[in-house]
Image (cartoon, rainbow, N blue to C red; front, side):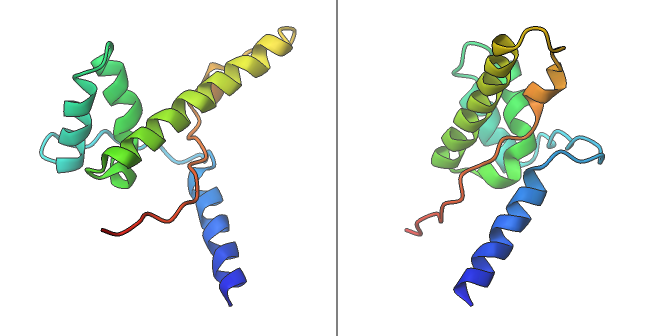
Length: 114
């Protein structure tokens, strides 16, 4: 039973993070507490508008949790670095900039409840 639940969780996560023809997630409104948390956190960065634009589509999963914010930010950076690395290894292939902006595969970890 546990294996079935784990399989369903992995499948649903893979489907949720895979690129689809659906429109891009909208930027949350200003009154959304998660968006405010992301904006406040991004204000401390070197490029706050780029930070907010990159992280705001994930506000539902980040909520107001600094650990989740860090995990999503690192996952995004890693995903984009891997995309660039693949292009640099084979420069004869055309570079698809949109591939650098695909949603990252977020780690499947249970969040500890406090």
